[in-house]
Length: 250
Image 1 (cartoon, rainbow, N blue to C red):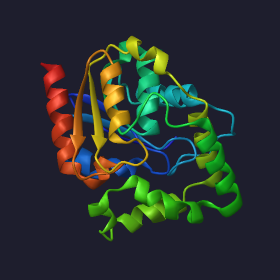
Image 2 (tube, rainbow, N blue to C red):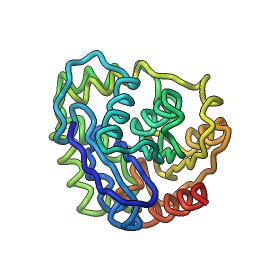
Image 3 (spheres, rainbow, N blue to C red):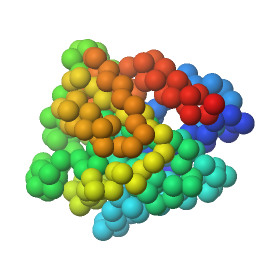
Image 4 (cartoon, rainbow, N blue to C red):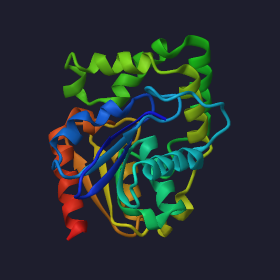
């Protein structure tokens, strides 16, 4: 698995990216964090520079991959920061290995990410038409109006279009089979839940419901972002993240 690790003696953070992106989605955020904070990023199976594993794995296996990367980086504990499916993976880590989680930052995610039927339809569309065709309809779900009007949005379209098709499909299948709504009460780590006003993938009401159902969660809703605020509004994202980590570290 491809990882990027910045060592440090301060707070320890692990970043888990969304479906169809790679670890570069966190570039601007990590660059703005205190330089003594240790930051571990990674590409999921079939994303970025990681190999595509045979299909048949689920979210628990992806969570185990993160724990293995933490072991390799000698991170006993960390704040787990996850976006979309990365946030679903983060929730699983909190359930599977709570002793290794100091806190959670759950960006634009939920305990179940939509109906299974929708994911099976997307898988069929990708198989029939390919990643590039599918990417056209995803960008408006990813970004708010401000980002969509920026030429930089097309860079992320290109990244999505070049994502390994089989890796993308396998992750879609993993998402389709996951619902941990009845276990949210077991996640007792302090949690920051982040959402975006223009998010079509996990709309504000979904984000608000997640925050309500987690025992120790606070909510920040960005006013001009869609599904990927770490890309769209890295300054605001970093400010919320930094304040949260400093508060739970006191």
